[in-house]
Image (tube, rainbow, N blue to C red):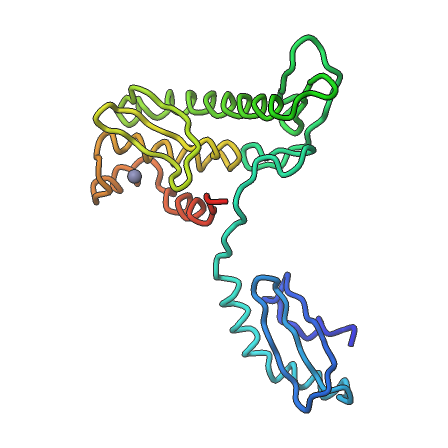
Length: 241
Ligand SMILES: [Zn+2]
């Protein structure tokens, strides 16, 4: 039954059929949304024509089930910055890490927009290298936060006394309105920069309106009309590892 996909409606893109012959008397359909698989269990002695008819007869049911499954947002896996020593997630892109000859000082830099270069002595201490990565990622994040503050503070008419980074387990950002201090989750350096922008604008808005009131969301809406889609993206990301 090689041409089983011929029977699939267009909406089934990305989905796969698995045909399993078993000692059973009827045909069964089962859907695995996480793997995007439709498993069909059929009796050993079934003819290809009968099977084809059975799939066609089930077509409306399958379309309905799969369309629903496609609209259920699957949560991302927890973020891990350094999945291996060969790549690193920076601003939503997985960039290759190239190890080059050590010069005078251990260092990391973004050689081009698509490659990260690290220069450390051979046999460099793993903990020291981890610290080097953390420092480098924080400097990238701080640089972009600075640019965003310069962009948004004058537009929104608010000024934060301080904007600092922290690894947080449950929040993307927070704002201490009494001392006008904003905390940004350091993990944001690994995600699409538009998510950092939303978190920062959100926290800046708290300087104007501390609570999540209707007025607060009106402020956000004024500056970032697409804030809702950014928030949904953040909510899909599991912060806890
Ligand atoms: Zn808030």
